[in-house]
Image (cartoon, rainbow, N blue to C red; front, side, top):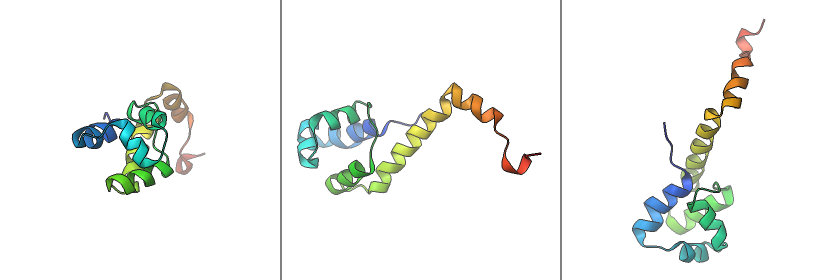
Length: 97
């Protein structure tokens, strides 16, 4: 599964189709342009505070934004080889001897 970064969703499905420049959206969200730019360029995730701001501005519930964030970053973690290796050595509680 290739879950889209929440910043890409924000840009591709909201800002771009609505014709909203990142600079304008940042001003309306009362955040620094660089903060929003880093988000839409997939350099940062969505914090709970940002989710609440996006809910107010765009009307999508904060839970929607947090779910996108969690799904994306959980998938990224699961793909890491060090995590996959560690998971192989963990014995599930019910199977411990």
